[in-house]
Length: 375
Image 1: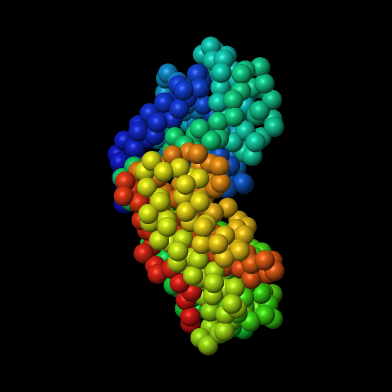
Image 2: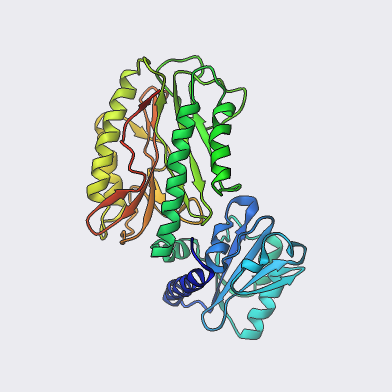
């Protein structure tokens, strides 16, 4: 388990990476918005050590000077504030407080992470007099390479997610409800320290045999599971690093559709292509092209994004997709999950893995066989 000293030391590395990105864009400061409401709390944790349990906050990183975090005054007790490793400030109007500080400091050009999806309108308006730069991609790229401390947290999340999938599969049986089966896995995830940081779904085809439809569903009690299910399991362990690990699950004796069988073959090819192509220096486009070839050669299209960087926020830049020329670097962590859909728009296969980028290729951290699991 990481100590406060470990995290404090890693924060220095994180600030150095972020400030290097800020310098490239001539920023005087960066404001990182985080909100528990929208699932973007990890960005603030990344820069402060504090986990938002309720409401929102802004981490402020000057190009020169000490970082600080600003909470709305009503959020004084919305987490364990003693875990914050930088100065905490409380104000009725955080945006106005940041603007006042910026004016006093002589800042002109301010980057904002979360400008489109996280920052509230009331906090954006006081900043309109400054040169505001959306900094989502740049911030994510600055935090995409994980430290040894972060990788320890990632591996712990993978351990939890992998065992959680096994728990899910052990509880599965045709005729059970999606809620019943997911509840068993969720109980394990909570017991292992995930708290509320889980986002677990299913892809099913009620009344059909040997196929799953491509739409993601909440695991509700009304959803009766058939003989083939695609669980989509995503969790973050105590260190708050998200991961994704799952396999398709079928009841023993189930006759899978011809398309599902062919998609499983393409998945095996993707797995080997990722091992080879996901190496430092390759581009996200290169990886996407390599791993999607087996699906496209069989006439399948990909629905959901092929893959993406993953960290303290579940979906981070860069994504693994066509035309994304961002180069991979050692110790990047990527979630991969080709969403294969047949020409009929119905038969689907979706399985998840969390990968580590190395100089020699991709390493699947869960170490599960890439195959449909029969129970």
